[in-house]
Length: 377
Image (cartoon, rainbow, N blue to C red; front, side, top):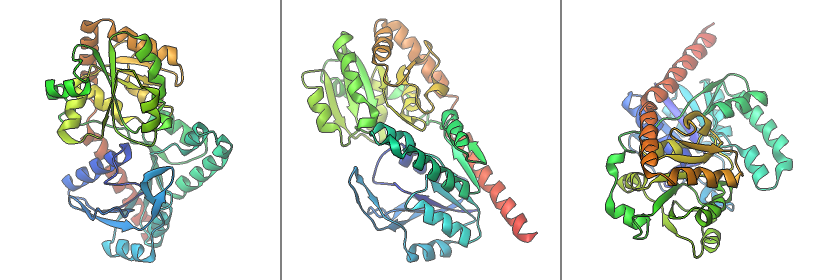
């Protein structure tokens, strides 16, 4: 089997979408599936066994880490030479929509997966008047594909409610060996806690941007005694957040990767995730795999993974008193915090990537079989 993927974002950028793509590519290689990926041209020509077909672009003002631009005719010829059996679009836009056309022209089936809630993002950035247009375009693009995948039940409901047909679930998993309590490290804990090892260490991992609502953590630091916060990641809101948190026990750690990231998760006490919107929230399950109880807003797949009072607490996005209370409850009793961490780890161990990625391969096979049967009829 040969799969051509199209994505609007890829390495060296680091985010949840790129993580999913890399995990998928690794799994496809393990299953002897040949792959190529069409992505913004960012200096990466190969990812392990996968060749990267770079698309020239310009810097996107809202997200300087992104370069945007449509594929060219030479892109099409490179994809054609690869002779894919199926095309997989990672939330199609400037690169993915032409990828849809390429799949149709090459007479191969097209799968589209949902990764970014653009309509809700528009609402968060106070341009909610464009939501109907975004919903309409999302419906049109995803319905143009042969099949679509949603990362969580809330996103599945959204997609079907706006009229997208032929939708299935592609749930998220976790690498329970990579994110594991065994990576707990005293030196890393001192680094994250600025030397205050005995405080309750709250951790956030992800993009520092307005839609993550990290400013909501300020009342937590002001109202819950003995807690500190480590922010792992970077983004456009970093300077504003530094000003906001001035004088409070907050450590801006920056990006961490590999074993350092595994150590950061395992060396904290609690994971906090106040985001306004997510399609899933992969970092929540990673934190649980590392043995951390979680306090998170009910966005994306959070409702699918948190059992209230057992492995964490969830709350309606924007309900800051509920966020504060969730952290307070867990931080007040260290023995209970440890028990909740064990429960979080136990749940994460049931969420394996292999089974979830194999479901995608099975979907590829069904689409290929159906396409070939249709063409031969």
